[in-house]
Image (cartoon, rainbow, N blue to C red):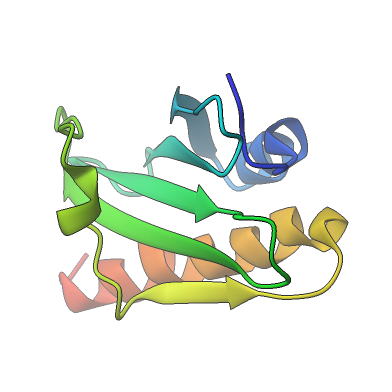
Length: 118
């Protein structure tokens, strides 16, 4: 399964240190995107889907979608991800896991939990 050049193993390890579980739910043969499912005891009742897009250009994109626990993505997933909530990455791909980790902490654990009153 393709992961668009993202070092998922390294990202998973970084996330595990923050008590976030990570699993690849979709990759592709074209190797230009992947979708990860994130869950955490720190955010019970919700999961996050993270889409990583790398189409070979300098800029890579990461989008996040927070859903109730048990939710699964449907085939037309693109319309569910909010293009306004996109992290654009430039520079070495090897730095992507750390930058994604910081963004996930902010968007999934901290900001969204605070907005929800958790």
